Image (cartoon, rainbow, N blue to C red; front, side, top):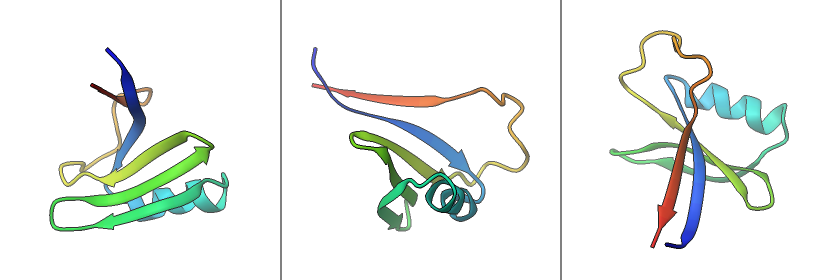
Length: 77
């Protein structure tokens, strides 16, 4: 099995505000903003080859009770 892509996903009720922090305070580079009926979010590059996805999640209503939870997507052939 060969891994051809991976990314860390962060879901938020306010991805605009969160991506602003990552871009303007942490210096991440905006790769693309997606704004469609099915998806809304930002692909950011932390450093060469390391990307994160910050996306809107409509079912988030309060702060996360699992503050150390991370979602990692691994894409394989």
